[in-house]
Length: 150
Image (cartoon, rainbow, N blue to C red; front, top):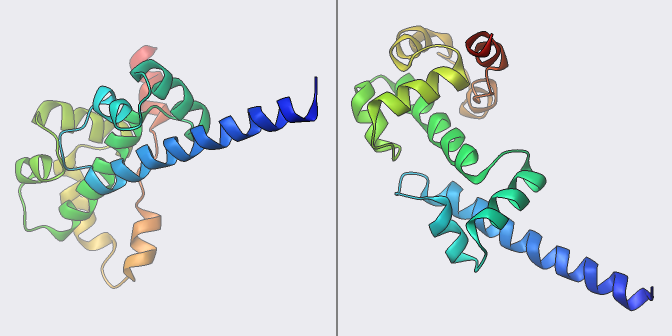
């Protein structure tokens, strides 16, 4: 094996990482738009399966999971504001099904969107936005997932 062959592999991996970053940036920008893995993959000229595998290897979760986490993160912000109904928040963040939104929200946050809205109203009062964003970032609720499987 020559040094050139290794360099070529490294260059190919870097090119692929750039494509994955473009997908992640697109999700971050367009989370409220209808996005699916096939459309994301077409945007960077990869197959949906390859994109899903490589995205998960690079970021620890599938593109769909990353998209839903971004949507739930934004929903949490809107629910804390308190001026929109749960249904309005669901559609504002790009979800088309209130049931799917509520289920995913509960999985990630540990409580329903309605309960979160009630609870969060006073929890973050007076905190700087940057602190609120970090402190309230959704994390997979592994306990709930284990209980459902159990």
